[in-house]
Length: 622
Image (cartoon, rainbow, N blue to C red; front, side):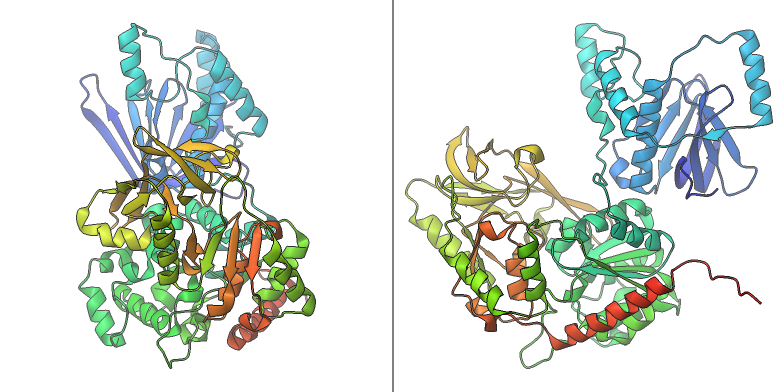
């Protein structure tokens, strides 16, 4: 099947089970790789076609009286029960984006279709029609159809196309209702991780990855790298895709694990031979063998030696001498931002300096459209700071921000510090100065033995101490339309029923409740933490601020010690109006010469790639 068509399909592992009246399984069919298509026959009836690996392995089901179980859809799993056929279709290892679209389309098309009575003549015609074939693909639901389905679902009472939740079932039993209600409109969202339109440059990256190429994509801060990574993860089969990052916080942002966990070689200080032996004896070896797609975010913080050792270990474990043992590699990061951590008196050795980089990376992309900042003047300043180019005009504009009053509604500016210890000291001392009693909130961890790991990888602390007047930052998207988003600044106004009530800079108010964060383990398990979604925000370290968008931030860059630190700090600001730079000095801004040279060659390769488009080679003309 041509999967570039406009049809609605999902490719995954499929298992079909038929039951008799007693509930015993009478027949089973398993497909390691199956393609499900949503089609219509000549009578406009909607069918689900299940096509296995063999050409004749095709089964079709009419989409009538079905129940859809989508609780584990975010893991690429779902099931559809065809009640008329007494068959249940179990789906697993499905790309999340495909699965969401497929199930949403079934919901929308069923909501919009009209039911016609079946007569003997129409049944005969349908059987003849099905014998001849002639099905046509159903296109994914349009915006108009989704809106229409929402309206109909909200106003029309009919049998639900999805299995009601236990809460709904209990409610009907209590009220004596037997007829299921129409599904609520919110089911149309189906926890879709891919909400939001991609730009053309982002689509090119995704297309290259779905085409099986090893890709490195980069871009300045705020160009949507994390957004694109989530789209990529949703487009790949989850069971064989490993999302990793150089740091725990970055891994948490994309729902993955650290590269160190994936590789199973610790800090990688041993020799290559010792690392290979270490990995072969660890639980990570099983993951290394089954992985087909490896994503590494914040690649700029991985040093060359470690990258080479991981690459050698993967080849050894998989017994495959292709680059990275034949795993498809998807690398993301900005080398102009934070470099690898190096010991004193040792030169930084970037990942792109390794031999493995040249062997592994096939295609390069650069995202150029900035989404975080809207002001073209500020974007231009940041682009110059990124490459270490500071003019007198830029110096004057940044110095002028020191006089700005950016506080409002009792919200003070968050100070960005070059060192984590400095940020912690500021937060502790400012909290101590506040009058009144303190409230302590202890996190509920699903595994007490993993508390230290959770502290390293999650933004939310295990122990949160608050007082009235404490400056805090929200660490979860609570209500996007009201501005209650990850990174929003607020101040604790009071405590109500034991929970903090926080006023935000935007004017909103929120009484906090326990929220849940999850991280994956190298073995595929899930560890969870429940905690109040706040962190003290008088100060943050530059390292901990990566990925955040701040609407009230100040900084003194006098103690920056790495190339790129000043750029990372400045690029956190949403605009010049919410930024205050104290005692700015042009000497505080510089870029690593090796990175400048890398990007010079990198852009030349991109230009050559644009001149010679990717794809099939053109036939020679005699």
